[in-house]
Structure formats: structure tokens, C-alpha cells
Length: 141
Image (tube, rainbow, N blue to C red):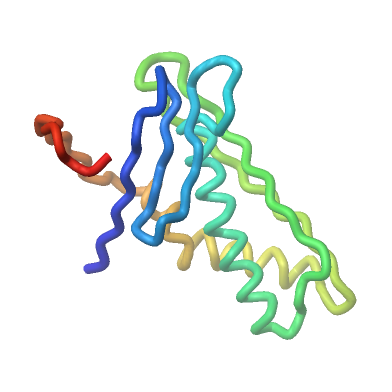
């Protein structure tokens, strides 16, 4: 089983810097004015990016490479806490010299039904457990 790790460092208030194991960084911000995406926006972006990777790969394998491509993710959230997403719509816009809409639709379906791990994680219960440890002086920041 593969394990991934991300560490968030509080900068100020609701502003955090997320860093993965490779050192890539993302600003996550809930303050006003925001200087990064909010966590629920990042979740939408993660679903959109995951399916986009799949679609690009599938279309290349079909020998219908996309010359222009974008993905939009729109999520509806519940009114009551925890205000989770109740519906997410991923719209794929693609074109290219040999691209057919049928092939693009099939690639999007394959991603959603079989390959996209982010979407699959949202479609089943996932165990999330909270652990609390003291932040000792001298620990790496």
C-alpha cells in the first residue's frame, strides 16, 4: 500500500503552507483577503486534475491527442455542517484535429468509473482519524 504525506505549517490565522514529500508547496488560505485556495476548492481542483491526467493519457492512447483542453469542477455544498459536497460536476472541454466528442466522453467516463483515485476516494467511506501530539521546542518547523 502506497503512503503519501503532506505537512501544513500555519503562517498566520487560517493561512497555511502545505508541503509534500518532494518539497512542492501550495498556499491554503481561509483568511480575507485570501492568498491561496480554500480547502474545499483544493478538493475540487484535485478531482479535476486527477480526471484531467487520465483523460489526457487515454486520448493519447487513442491517438486523438488534445490540442486544447480544460476541465471545470463545480461543487454543491450542504447547508449544514460539515457542509460537505453533495454534488460535483466535472465538465471536460477538449478539441484537436482528430478528437471526437465520443472518444472524449468515453475517456471521461473511464476516468470517473475506473482510474481517478481522487473521485474514487469521494465515492466510498474513507477512515479519517485525528491524532494530537505536543509541538516540542526544537522540532523541525
